[in-house]
Picture 1 (cartoon, one colour):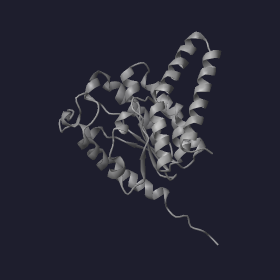
Picture 2 (cartoon, one colour):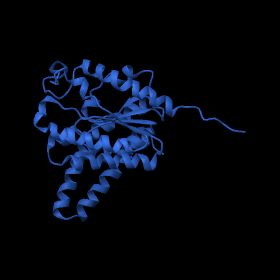
Picture 3 (cartoon, helix red, strand yellow):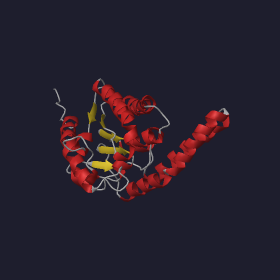
Length: 250
């Protein structure tokens, strides 16, 4: 119905209208939470404006592979080239939390109607240390359920949240969140769990600090090459599965 900048403006106005309406109707405690959601909505407007402008300048074919998530994916600058010839589009936005992926669902999934979604998000939720792994997982499950309900057959690949050296004290929560998602994915059709954490440690289980930038969270290019070696074979297999020609009977 909409494309490019028109779609961006439509979804922005609708999202903001819903949140402002909730603030007007809610109790003070809920209103505070919703107000925070409005602020987070505003925070990511530049990213989505940029996405819309890029789509306007170079329209993207629907039915490809869509990367969504936070800065670990956003900073994967060469992912399209490294995953070639697979049709990978990166629409991750930095600093985002799992609830932000839900809030932006309409601007992500319906816009591109991907056959495969590759999802990385949860690191920022855990760092904020405001919600339990169960709550964070429940929001991912909501995202998953929206995909299943509206786009049956779409494959969803969850890439494990990393055990980054900047938050060693939160590794138990990282592990718990990953375990909850892994268990859910194992019993949910068309879902796959990929663990990238083994690529980030040495033979003794210690973090490979040479892969990390100074913040001990984000990565140098070598880490993304290592991720490609893990993720691309899985993507290649699933891409072949979703593109099997349908036999026609006469």
